[in-house]
Amino acid sequence: MKKNDYLCWLMNQSQLVAEGPDGYLSLCEILMDTYFLSLIEFDENRAEEGKALRDEWAESVCGDTFDTDLLPYTCTMLELILVMARRMAYEMADSQYEAGVGKWVMEILENAGLATFRNDYFETDPEYHGNRIRAILKDIIYRRYLHTGDGSFFPAKYYTTKDYRQMELLTQMNNYLAENYDIC
Image (tube, rainbow, N blue to C red; front, side):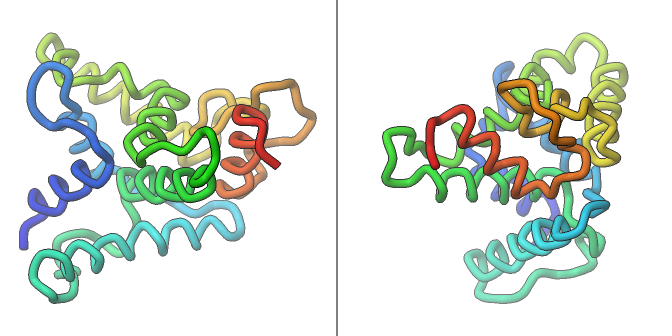
């Protein structure tokens, strides 16, 4: 079991194409090398869900547990995005907005300003674009986005006095879905 095999599995689960100019391999490699820090109470639950993907992969591949030497103890940003997208797909199941995980992964990437970083972007200046992605991810991790969530995975649609920087990710996600998809 290799880290690259796990990355390919995560990309497949996320329904992200790896190869070609419209692929996301370069972005996903950076997402895999960037670790999520739980700075808000209960966000550690999302990190644990992300790490649980490792055992899900290992069991599906060879019926074994994940080799903990492949990745550190901390959840990666790619794992976190997949976990949040799966929750969104679950919450929207059996509604008029039901969609596969890939739709929600792309929506998260678009909200964060990461969807434009396809493989073709990296051909021009990989170091520059890699640094831009890392800066965006640091702002999300350290919650250096607007109080309305602009610059995060789940921005508020309408002006709010709630400070999204102080909300756990699950609450942000639920607010986002309620505002954008008319669900209760």
